[in-house]
Image (cartoon, rainbow, N blue to C red; front, side):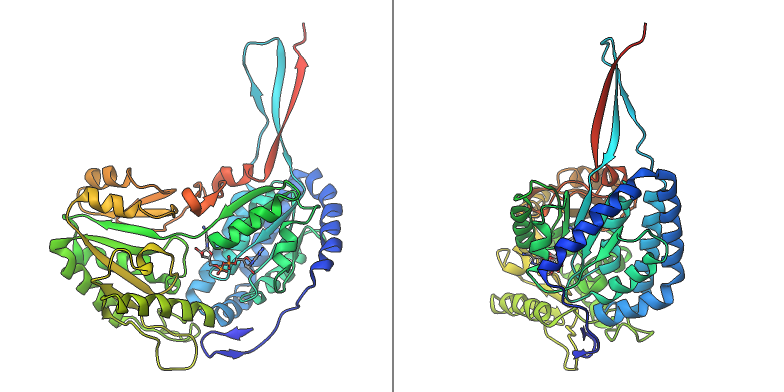
Length: 449
Ligand code: NAD
């Protein structure tokens, strides 16, 4: 494993062969029988798991920062969110639902688990995204085989050790290794639900693989979220929030602001406010206490961010801040604010997934909404202004799963999370996430006289 703050290898994880999955999935299937049978024992085990994760924070968080790059406080926040998610789903109870349609039968929907679930996750929030898979799947009574990204397997393996002390054997198994391990897992005939978070092209490949066994598929995919700034915005009052909505985790958030649309007359003010913040941000190793922004996670991603930026600059964009790698070891890229970017530059139309933000001027709100909706992505969006009714009316026109006013990417465990267009299939989060891991089973019986 490479530490992105130094570019040097510091540890490694097992490289499991795809043919080892037969035994892993077989054991997950065998463990399902006991795990699904006793909801009260399951709830107790998941609450104990939450306590164990919390208690292991000092062990998990520094390792997460070491392999992922994010500031240590954000790694602690990931650990806390993992524990909170376990508690949230442990408390949900998928109660039977009677069907009252006037017929002389008593029919009722009872919720049943699916079987072994395969979860495949990326490298930007290794623990948080893993828990977004295993907490609802396990709470529903399924067992789960989890494959982390080959860039960030270590904290997940450590987490699995922590959970192994409180969960029954083989209820949750972490498998690490290179492709085709994920492809094989997605198409394994013993898997009943494939839940994937990652890029759109890989999501498409995963759906194709899962079609072999007709397993249920949930896909949480890429985004290219737009923020629309209205002409009554408080520029200085909003700039910190807008900046960090784009740059937290080095912009490596599916739901980060990835492009900003600003009224032409405010364009230079907003560019300047964001550029000031970019220049003042402390960039450094995530383990350094003063660091606000860590490195990009891996060399391929750094090259990708650089490619998008260079192309925009070659197309006539101006870097109001940054625009280049930092001249130091590791995968550091200067926080970058781009002005004068052509609207069809790939940094605007595609997902660059890095610390780069194009700021584009518009003349009418209709034009801004049209531009925001003009891509194949549909994860989130936001509208920024002081008249909240007007801002909400604009937000209502965004083609995405979640829209915020004067904020972005603030998510509750209790809300549904569902991208539209190419950003996703299925619903995660809240009770919807639990039901995504359950199947309805209906019993009809004649009404007694
Ligand atoms: P990726 O698609 O390259 O990889 C995701 C996972 O899939 C990794 O574990 C990878 O090893 C595995 N994988 C690769 N090829 C596979 C195959 N053929 N079959 C099965 N699995 C395979 O994504 P990434 O670069 O790790 O992560 C960044 C992407 O994830 C961005 O597009 C980002 O927007 C997206 N993302 C989406 C969400 C969301 O909730 N919508 C959240 C976080 C990240």
